[in-house]
Image (tube, rainbow, N blue to C red; front, side, top):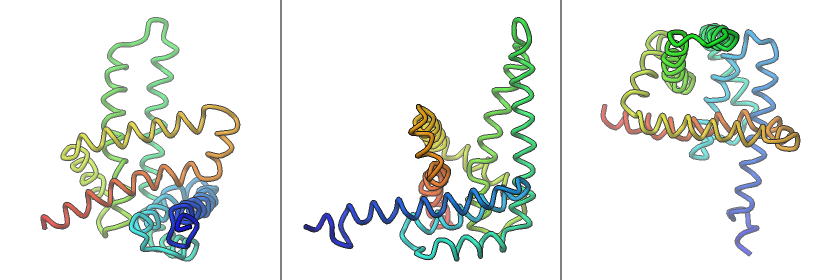
Length: 203
């Protein structure tokens, strides 16, 4: 049956699943030092962007190469967004522990979260695909988020759904540990690559 042939749907599904498990493992290992989360994420996006169109077959080799190539910028960008994440968390905690909640803080938190998502969502895919400064990369991410607002909302919604599914129970949490991170990265990469290709055609 063609389903079980090397070009069949089942084989392709298993192959892609195995690639995501490998990528997820490499990404987690790269994130262990904490400070290298940005470099590891950039490397994972470099691989995932190629996986979208089956352009990459050597997952580990490609990941290690991109980790080295993007170590400096990826690490700095990771630290920037780690600080931004912590700032959002503090805003949430301050608003949560207040007796009646602070409306101004809540509004600031919502606006900050929107800016945060706009700035971060495409930054690592952009850094993985193009050579640019960190500031320009973040600005480009925000501009893409504005221009492709509908798709940005769709990506965000899908990521939230994936997070909810992988945290539904202990079994799904275990499954998510094996490939959940890479699955989310692949999701963003799939949408991002199509957007990048559209922008490249315009230029």
